[in-house]
Image (cartoon, rainbow, N blue to C red; front, top):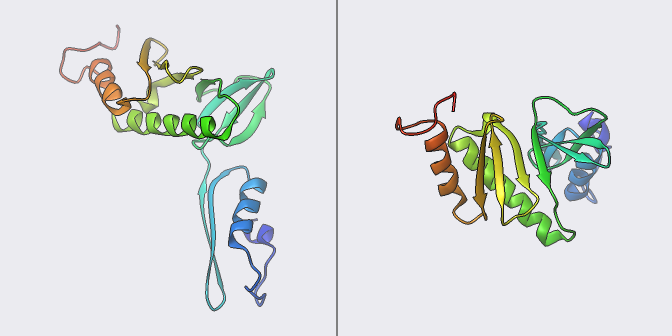
Length: 174
Protein backbone atom coordinates (compact mmCIF):
# COMPACT_ATOMS: atom_id res chain seq x y z
CA UNK A 1 0.00 0.00 0.00
CA UNK A 2 2.87 2.36 0.82
CA UNK A 3 4.67 1.62 -2.44
CA UNK A 4 1.44 2.05 -4.38
CA UNK A 5 0.77 5.44 -2.76
CA UNK A 6 4.31 6.63 -3.50
CA UNK A 7 3.38 6.51 -7.17
CA UNK A 8 6.78 5.41 -8.36
CA UNK A 9 7.96 2.27 -10.02
CA UNK A 10 11.23 0.64 -10.96
CA UNK A 11 13.03 2.62 -13.64
CA UNK A 12 11.53 6.03 -12.73
CA UNK A 13 13.95 8.93 -12.48
CA UNK A 14 14.63 10.26 -8.99
CA UNK A 15 15.33 13.76 -10.31
CA UNK A 16 12.34 15.91 -9.44
CA UNK A 17 11.38 13.41 -6.71
CA UNK A 18 10.51 15.25 -3.49
CA UNK A 19 11.07 13.01 -0.47
CA UNK A 20 9.47 15.63 1.79
CA UNK A 21 6.29 15.81 -0.30
CA UNK A 22 6.07 12.01 -0.45
CA UNK A 23 6.48 11.78 3.35
CA UNK A 24 3.67 14.29 3.91
CA UNK A 25 1.47 12.56 1.34
CA UNK A 26 1.88 9.18 3.06
CA UNK A 27 1.20 10.69 6.49
CA UNK A 28 -2.01 12.32 5.32
CA UNK A 29 -3.27 9.26 3.42
CA UNK A 30 -2.34 6.50 5.87
CA UNK A 31 -3.77 7.45 9.27
CA UNK A 32 -2.19 4.54 11.11
CA UNK A 33 1.33 5.77 10.41
CA UNK A 34 2.67 8.19 13.02
CA UNK A 35 6.09 8.86 11.49
CA UNK A 36 7.13 8.60 7.84
CA UNK A 37 10.59 9.37 6.49
CA UNK A 38 11.09 9.00 2.73
CA UNK A 39 14.60 9.43 1.40
CA UNK A 40 16.71 8.57 -1.60
CA UNK A 41 20.04 6.85 -2.02
CA UNK A 42 21.72 7.49 -5.31
CA UNK A 43 21.88 6.20 -7.91
CA UNK A 44 18.36 4.80 -7.79
CA UNK A 45 16.99 3.71 -4.42
CA UNK A 46 14.06 5.08 -2.44
CA UNK A 47 14.14 4.35 1.30
CA UNK A 48 10.92 4.55 3.31
CA UNK A 49 11.01 4.35 7.12
CA UNK A 50 7.71 4.29 8.99
CA UNK A 51 6.54 4.09 12.56
CA UNK A 52 3.04 2.70 13.00
CA UNK A 53 0.61 4.71 15.09
CA UNK A 54 -0.69 3.23 18.31
CA UNK A 55 -4.14 4.07 19.62
CA UNK A 56 -3.24 5.74 22.93
CA UNK A 57 -5.71 8.52 23.76
CA UNK A 58 -9.41 9.24 23.41
CA UNK A 59 -10.90 12.71 23.44
CA UNK A 60 -14.51 13.81 23.38
CA UNK A 61 -15.24 16.34 20.64
CA UNK A 62 -18.53 17.56 19.20
CA UNK A 63 -20.53 14.59 20.50
CA UNK A 64 -18.07 12.02 19.19
CA UNK A 65 -14.93 10.35 20.46
CA UNK A 66 -11.64 10.94 18.71
CA UNK A 67 -9.04 8.18 18.95
CA UNK A 68 -5.55 9.70 18.95
CA UNK A 69 -2.05 8.31 18.55
CA UNK A 70 0.97 8.95 20.76
CA UNK A 71 1.73 11.96 18.55
CA UNK A 72 -1.89 13.20 18.85
CA UNK A 73 -2.80 12.25 15.30
CA UNK A 74 -6.52 11.56 14.89
CA UNK A 75 -6.74 7.92 13.85
CA UNK A 76 -10.50 7.44 13.83
CA UNK A 77 -13.77 8.64 15.33
CA UNK A 78 -16.31 6.66 17.31
CA UNK A 79 -19.90 7.27 18.40
CA UNK A 80 -19.29 5.40 21.66
CA UNK A 81 -16.50 5.78 24.18
CA UNK A 82 -13.60 3.48 23.23
CA UNK A 83 -12.22 1.05 25.83
CA UNK A 84 -8.64 0.74 27.03
CA UNK A 85 -7.42 4.21 26.05
CA UNK A 86 -6.28 7.16 28.15
CA UNK A 87 -8.95 9.84 28.31
CA UNK A 88 -7.23 13.08 27.33
CA UNK A 89 -8.94 16.23 28.49
CA UNK A 90 -7.43 19.27 26.83
CA UNK A 91 -8.48 22.73 25.81
CA UNK A 92 -5.57 23.73 23.63
CA UNK A 93 -5.72 27.39 22.60
CA UNK A 94 -5.65 28.24 18.91
CA UNK A 95 -2.19 28.98 17.59
CA UNK A 96 0.76 26.84 16.65
CA UNK A 97 2.99 27.79 19.60
CA UNK A 98 0.44 26.69 22.20
CA UNK A 99 -0.23 23.42 20.40
CA UNK A 100 3.45 22.58 20.18
CA UNK A 101 3.98 23.44 23.85
CA UNK A 102 1.01 21.28 24.90
CA UNK A 103 2.15 18.38 22.71
CA UNK A 104 5.72 18.63 24.04
CA UNK A 105 4.38 18.69 27.60
CA UNK A 106 2.22 15.62 26.95
CA UNK A 107 5.11 13.73 25.37
CA UNK A 108 7.38 14.65 28.31
CA UNK A 109 4.66 13.54 30.74
CA UNK A 110 4.11 10.21 28.97
CA UNK A 111 7.86 9.51 28.89
CA UNK A 112 8.17 10.21 32.63
CA UNK A 113 5.09 8.08 33.39
CA UNK A 114 6.53 5.17 31.42
CA UNK A 115 10.01 5.50 32.98
CA UNK A 116 8.47 5.43 36.45
CA UNK A 117 6.10 2.49 35.86
CA UNK A 118 2.84 4.45 35.88
CA UNK A 119 1.94 4.59 32.17
CA UNK A 120 -0.18 1.43 32.06
CA UNK A 121 -2.36 2.56 34.97
CA UNK A 122 -3.25 6.02 33.64
CA UNK A 123 -7.01 6.50 33.19
CA UNK A 124 -7.25 10.25 32.51
CA UNK A 125 -4.82 13.05 31.72
CA UNK A 126 -6.22 16.55 32.20
CA UNK A 127 -4.46 19.31 30.28
CA UNK A 128 -7.34 21.76 30.08
CA UNK A 129 -5.12 24.24 31.96
CA UNK A 130 -1.39 23.86 31.35
CA UNK A 131 -0.68 25.42 34.75
CA UNK A 132 -2.80 22.72 36.48
CA UNK A 133 -1.69 19.45 34.88
CA UNK A 134 -3.09 16.34 36.53
CA UNK A 135 -3.79 12.68 35.92
CA UNK A 136 -5.88 9.88 37.35
CA UNK A 137 -4.16 6.58 38.12
CA UNK A 138 -6.21 3.36 38.05
CA UNK A 139 -9.37 5.41 38.43
CA UNK A 140 -8.59 5.86 42.14
CA UNK A 141 -5.60 8.18 42.67
CA UNK A 142 -5.74 11.76 41.42
CA UNK A 143 -2.34 13.43 41.04
CA UNK A 144 -2.04 17.19 40.55
CA UNK A 145 1.28 18.18 39.00
CA UNK A 146 0.79 21.91 38.53
CA UNK A 147 2.96 23.31 35.74
CA UNK A 148 5.33 21.33 33.55
CA UNK A 149 8.31 22.65 35.55
CA UNK A 150 10.27 19.75 37.11
CA UNK A 151 7.79 17.29 35.61
CA UNK A 152 10.23 14.36 35.81
CA UNK A 153 10.78 14.95 39.53
CA UNK A 154 7.06 15.36 40.27
CA UNK A 155 6.14 12.14 38.47
CA UNK A 156 9.02 10.23 40.08
CA UNK A 157 7.82 11.43 43.50
CA UNK A 158 4.22 10.44 42.70
CA UNK A 159 5.39 6.99 41.51
CA UNK A 160 7.28 6.46 44.77
CA UNK A 161 4.07 7.06 46.73
CA UNK A 162 1.62 5.33 44.41
CA UNK A 163 3.69 2.22 43.73
CA UNK A 164 4.76 1.93 47.39
CA UNK A 165 8.43 1.65 46.38
CA UNK A 166 9.87 2.10 49.90
CA UNK A 167 6.98 0.62 51.84
CA UNK A 168 5.83 4.12 52.89
CA UNK A 169 3.36 4.81 50.08
CA UNK A 170 -0.13 3.77 49.11
CA UNK A 171 -1.22 0.16 49.10
CA UNK A 172 -3.33 -1.28 46.30
CA UNK A 173 -6.46 -0.85 48.43
CA UNK A 174 -5.86 2.83 49.30
